[in-house]
Image (cartoon, rainbow, N blue to C red):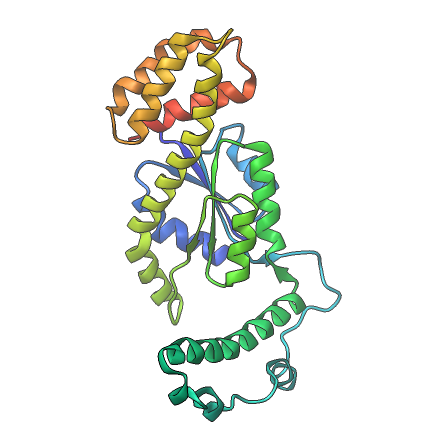
Amino acid sequence: MPPVFCFIDDAQFELDNFAQNAAPAFERARFVYARTFDEARAGLAGEYPLCFLLDIYGAGPPVTAPRIPDPAELEQALGPAADLPSLYEGLEQAGPEAGNLYLRRLHGQVERWQRAFLQAAGGLGQGRAYGLHNLEQARLHYPHAAALGYSRKALYADAVAISLAGAEGLLQKPQGGDDQAIALATRQAAPGLAQAAYAAVNRRLSVQAAGLAARLSGPGGDPALAQALQGALASLHGQGERGPASQALHDLAGRTAGLGPGDRALLESLGLWLEAA
């Protein structure tokens, strides 16, 4: 049975769209879908996931009266209308820096819309605390699993926040003008999304397994198990065949009794991932 990945998103539309249009491209994995982390743990039913895809924006603490801002409030949040002539003022005297100066000014206008977006999201009880909480829980309960942000609404600051919190990266949900366009864009993007998730799993397992291999190679360790683990690491990076590397770990499964539960979970996850190649 393929390894399990987990997609957590507070919108049922996004879960259904992914299941129908993206998941078929993930030939090396199967998915558990959930709207909260607790729901994900229940759905996993004791299995150890190898990857989390985490929506960033979602429902946070309930607001007293969530609502969409009216046009007057949006206009106030955006501030004065864009003064287009000011974007070009003095560019002819800026020389080689004209392009950068223009882009800084233009980005200032973009920032106004971003601030208005954040204000509206807060008024509706949504924010990046949702994704950061799920990332924190994933790291706490499944430390060997990769975790990727997966968002359509995330801003630059959100990408920074989730990166600093330790995610392996951030993927962008495919966009479209309506549900059908989003479905088509998702199908088209799905192979790339799968490869990005697989690469994140490789990176996460490599980092975790390298530390274990170093400990097993030291005094009081298990040289044979360390060698098998190093062979598995090499195969993750395309320097050996995955089948024999997985079999070597399997053959030494009886020597893991002295390891802690976290180390055993890592070895099991690594072996399962090698088998799924």
